[in-house]
Length: 193
Length: 193
DNA sequence: TCGTTTGTTGATTGACCAGTCAATTAAAAT
DNA sequence: ATTTTAATTGACTGGTCAATCAACAAACGA
Image (cartoon, rainbow over all chains, first blue to last red; front, side, top):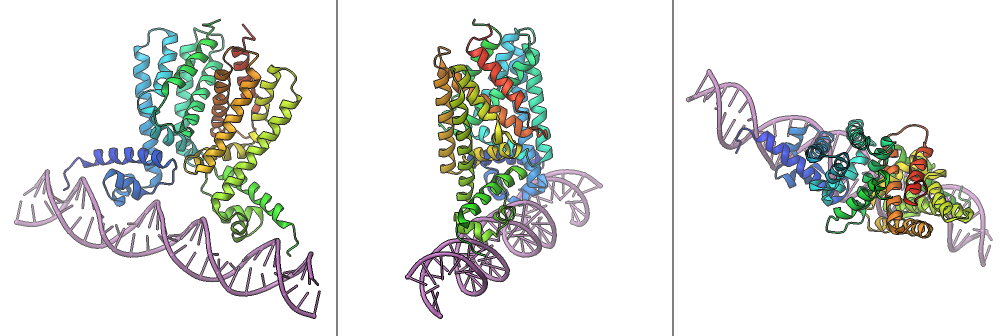
């Protein structure tokens, strides 16, 4: 049933299936067949559209990263004060789709992928740099070493992610993670003496 | 040339080779053959002594964890004040063999392994729990919410590990990570107002 | 109407790998 | 001296999987 314009939605379905399957299995050891099945197509089609497994993984990473970027940009836009901008970045990190168990698990695996795949490493570095830059910017009026604050907060976010991926409690308890971050931010900006 | 008492040193060599190879490749996708070669034996021998690849991986995890435990215990023993005990735990986390690139990379991969292997997950949870408990204990006289401090510090340690595994700079720059942790601990214990 | 493009798959290939087994060596025990 | 036991491996097996290919189906354009 070849209607034209399938490409876009097939690619989309495959990318989503990739994230879903990696997250579900908790490992990069998912076959093209599994992913393709989850997307409702044959493995041959996945190869047809993406060329290779690596390309598909990269596409999935880009999807997550741009999703995060979108949410971050939106949250930043709504924030009025510097402190609110910090909170917005925290909210974006732990809010929405980003903190769903599957996505967190996939995320962790992409960190691993970045150790082998040069392109994955590059993608991840761009994301990290952008997050630190955003945090630094927001923190500049609030403390005397905004870069240190930004780096610490970024590491804290990653650490909470990784810990969340392990203790696979059903409900994605974002509020605890957010509270931890906010507590640190208050401390570092000298809010609560 | 079968001399007796080979088992212990073969097992040791295989466990070390496992950490080394996983760290070098940055992935759990290492074959028994590669590991065995690195240890100077045949893959059949690795199976003979460990039974399966999973068992070998678990043994490698246990090796890293007990190494960390040993260093932590030693550092704690030398510390006199509560604040020094916190620093000792930080030192143990980023000092010695624990922060060598290969070990960090292997560590990250064990986090991934824990998503599939129940036993690996259990091991990791024990380590995490023990770290948090130690940190909480040390922090109890220093602040009013020692558990929150401990959890935050633990997450921060993990986050710095993961970030270190990515930006694969040759020299293992532990000092920066330690400085970040110490800065947070000073803040959280109300040292520098 | 008929070629062309786009979408789609089943079958196949080629490589790789965990785990098994039978066989070999030599030390230790009797 | 001979039996037992530990150490060790090469060769093999069964299975898995990424990637390819040839073929088919339906829409579109001429």
